[in-house]
Length: 232
Image 1 (cartoon, rainbow, N blue to C red):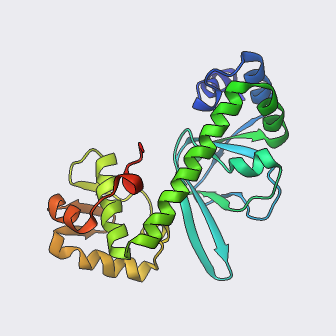
Image 2: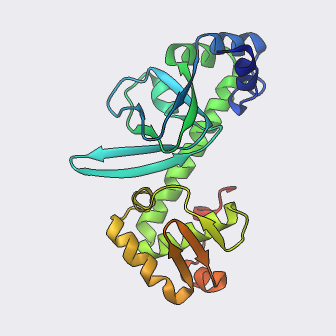
């Protein structure tokens, strides 16, 4: 990495409070790589060789079985994956690929485990990543088991509108087939679900979405703090 890139990497949340010599050791062995969209970064079943940290762009964490595939999570800048496999020196239970052009920091797994044992701040940062991932999976499990597909879509629209500035209109951040997988439904079911939201004044033209009556949509969705609030 170039000196300016190393300095940029030092500011990642993962290294907050970490001893400078330990940060230097980790970055000295690491690689900062640029990937175009739809490049596989980690493959399910392979031994974890790197801790991946998203610097720019979006990364999809997913799993496949026979001819079926499901999206587990979509991660943005600052998030690491797949942390548990790296710490335990086990195989990846999920795969990951870039959804958009992305910059990803690759930290060798052996170096991660070495500094994890030596630096409390680094161990705490990784523990927080694991805790957030665990809570995210619990929320997603509840979302999938307690709600219909239409309710999951309605809640996703409300949540993303909030993330996009509560303007009542936004552009989908990824392809509809990824959104369908993220919500646990087939693409054709997603299309029918969008059609079912027309009475709630949800309009979809290509990747552009407009929420004409957010309160009506909330009545349908019934957002729940312990599922939908990212701060909880």
